Amino acid sequence: MQWWCAALGEQWTWTWRAYPGVWLFVIAVGAGFRWLAGSGAWSRATATERGALIVGGLTLWASLDWPLGPIAAGYLASAHALQFLIETMVAAPLLLFGVRSGFAARAPRTMPPLARRAGRLVVHPLMAAIVFNVVVATTHVPAVVDGLMPSALGAFAIDAAWFFSAVLFWWPVIMPAPSYPHFGPPLKILYLLVGTLFHTVIGMIMLSAELPIYGVYELAPPIFAISPRADQQLAGGIMELGVFGAIVISSAIVFFRWANKDERRA
Image (tube, rainbow, N blue to C red; front, side, top):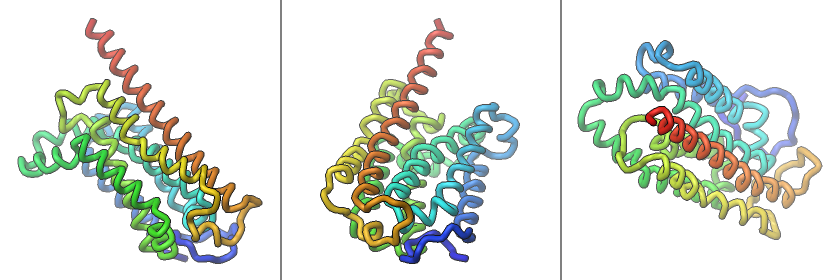
């Protein structure tokens, strides 16, 4: 039993391992979103929001726990990229969407003025995009990955930074409060497209590099019949195409919700 998935340098085995740190983290995240939604949120939520909350929690847990968690931590860069995609582009927005109605009902009357002002600054679209991209850039630097992934605490720091920065990134798009009058659907779509351009840079570097750039995956015991360079190229494809696909789908949802709202008004 280990606290968190980390790169151990051991030969891979399909024997199940317990990671209680992952379980506690997912429970804590669930409790945090439960607090955001407030009491009675489940009854106020729509069927779509309930489904999003359940799927978001399950995908977050699946991305961190066995077997994807340990494979991503110390064996395959492509699994690590898939983990990043699930945490930031699937779990985070789904969990936020699941609590949006509950948060809208409780936030104005329960948050003190100072907390509202601080929250408005933290989740401002510009601030959220900067924080998210700084985290993405930093956690993909080879020295950072090779230095942190071999330890459970270091691997946890990367996973937590990914998830919580993604929550900040998606907040202005999904959550109803705080509201920014000029940040309407067209700017939300532009925000999603421009705010994730850095993933394209990372994906292109992985795809074009002649040699593996992460020692932890280059020197890892083989798990499948795939070379380290091919694994890295696959990771680059996941970063580039996977994130782009998620953003296109999200932008389409924003656009069609906007179009339907205008049609109802007309």
